[in-house]
Length: 105
Image (tube, rainbow, N blue to C red):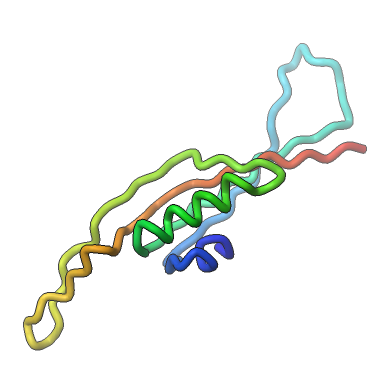
């Protein structure tokens, strides 16, 4: 969320999912645990803000991956006077960012 807001995007929804990676049964037992951390975001903003956000994700350490991306134009809106409120620069964006977190004991 912070990367998106810093880039100038408006976040309208987010969801965090964390789940453990399963080891194949034939692997040697290990005390290492790995977790996938996935964030789903719904955002709105201009193309340049999306570009800045994706660059922040690309440069992050440890590495993150954008695993899904859906971009749409927002619906045309009319105010009470009937004037069109369409902003051609704005996009509706849904995406998933995923990272791997490891814990060793």
